[in-house]
Image 1: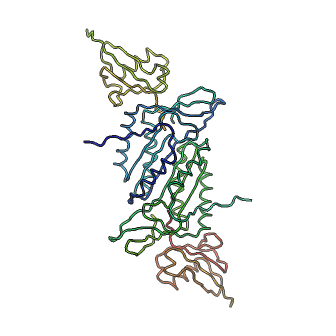
Image 2: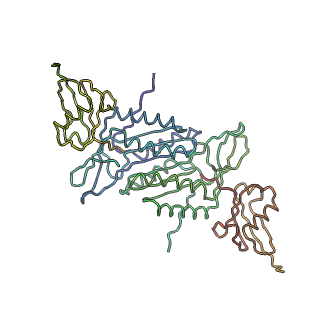
Length: 146
Length: 146
Length: 82
Length: 82
């Protein structure tokens, strides 16, 4: 029987304390020498004199979880990694808050240097997640990834 | 008058809560879209059947602080970064604890992907910091960076 | 001539919820490939022009030449997570 | 012939604290370049052979051809932070 896939989604913003707990939980894994963490934070972008105040995220959760799992499996094959954790917000995340938390650990730093940007880029490109940028004046636009 | 250089050194291990506080302190910086964090954790390396239990760090603190500052200035010139923070332990850090915390933030992720590995590699190569690996049986060896 | 009518229940995401609706029913006189479904959508909703669409069924993204079984589908505009 | 004696006070780091000591006084009949200091150290402490040494004075790392002022110096084995 294969391991059930853990969901990457959390409701609302990701609390810095969650990140601290996640780091602390790795202190018993004594083969690890290097951690690297990526955090996406909602930026107060200006568009035509109006300003983003929050992003509302929706997703096809089951498919996103499955694809995230496949991307992780691929990177475990490719690099010598100890663990990988991915968390993405659903719902409303205000400017300045964290909406995306990706955590990669390995015995040596070269592996995390290579794997983390690759993981972040793949997740942004391949997960069915949709960001709606909400503006101060009540309008919105759909986020476009570069 | 130039800004005084902030010391990168902290006594003993770096607490995950310090990392959480550092992340939380950036939530008011709303031009930031991406953070990347590197953490060095003391690894339980095996050498000839004996095992590392801690690393004791010493440094030429003033020179290390000055060089770290110069490396940061160089990266601020080179990439579009919002902030950079560096913390390194002095004294004893046990296996599983964090001894090195490097935090880079930018409006966009590409800049942190490039700057963080470059910053970490430069700090490891250029700072007069010395790690003494202490073994279970009471012996020690001096750490060698690759 | 095959007179059996096929129903596709489409769940829309992101921008498509505004251009099409949260869900919509699409009837066809036979099974459709993903490519044919996209052509039908563009005909029914001309405002979709220029928007690259992806289609998933049974928790799998489908290529344009694959045939869709009757039933539920998810349709996606470009992804923008992170 | 210059009879003035120069004193260098060396502060050692890392492995060098075990091979030389925490600090040591080095006397010379004239100022030394960094390269000449390294040669003197290797002569006085043959166990240093094969260990690349760096020298700093007044909070600056010094190149081999630079001349050291009398007084305090820091001497380093390879760095191993992080």
